[in-house]
Length: 528
Image (tube, rainbow, N blue to C red; front, top):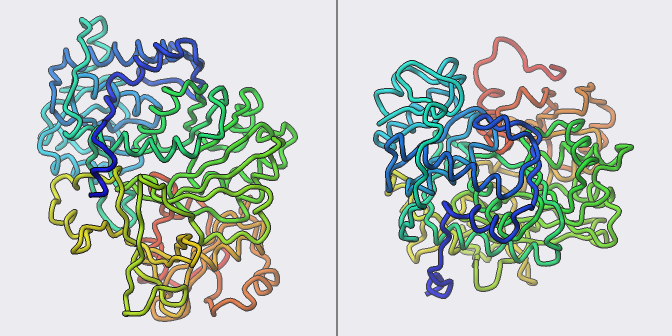
């Protein structure tokens, strides 16, 4: 069997920083914010200091009666300590459940009910402003990571708790629970084991092979994302200096990168799109970048071209990965400056031999092609083991012969490259790929910050556009850009912050479509 070939070696999350500090004790970690649980540590730490911090707060969790096998939800204000608290929970044998700080209180309350009286680690701000009072009824205990709240236990009050040895858990048991993006409704709770987390590190090791271990790695990924946990573990164990970012503001990013020039940048595709403006910054904040990497989603060719052009390294490259929260990275391709011109953004590359497999299954009995795409299905050692509390839903994601259905449509070329055309739920009749049209519009209109094409409620598909600095759309340039493309409705302009986003900055297309095609007080604005 495929998964048997991968072996069963796992990773103990609770001791990652102990092992990393033993190998690279002085390796630095730079932050663009203060940690809520330890603001006094400042913004330049070492792996040794982080290992000590994890040990300290693991002892506090133990003193609060958190025990092996317990589910511990971490839902607090945005900070790297969300990820660090996951390692603390794992250190005492608990199962960290990371819920994004961007989730609303009602959604968090529903997920807490599904989890069956877990421990909740949150903060004063969340309890006062967002979380409903009933969360105290659906949890075993509420721990406050920053501040205080009636009926909750402050972790600060447990300072000085006796240290406890790290708990070693079987690697085939649940080790981490994160939620899916929630683009199609209430997020699902994806369960990983130590084995699946380790398997997710292997493809990333392949992509990092050309990169020296002294290259600083800048990471701007949701602190509640599974990629943040596996990625941080990998980078720390390799000894890379780490630059951990909460903010994607271009001005602050430029200042940080000018002070600590990264050799690797990993972030969500929409953040890389946002950072295109750094290419022309006078401080040249991207000059030292050897590798750009995105998390699991296809990237627009314009962004690749712009970022590679900003690097002054001899041979920079862009590593694009394709996957999802349920599987980890499945396929990848690399771009160099030689590949920039005319790159096909729909090509997401090839699988990782011996680690991942992919096939495309016909929907109409014909071989899948661009004009007749099929279902993308995969096998991966990094695939989750279940959706917590929704086993039937999990089982329904498999084909009869055991392949995991990604929910994407695409095809493979005769050279073996996988091409992603659309999510199944986003498919629009008469359009072979909305993503391909968006790629073309980005290339033809450099002023675009975002463009999303959604169904038109029975009419032509609606393009929603956001422009840099919220400038008004030049209609003459738009008409020239859409020439030769499938018929589209008149564009609707919005500010970027008006679009519904997931925790990983993806636009919720279905929600956006409902906003545009549902009951309206008047005609749709094209200039808002």
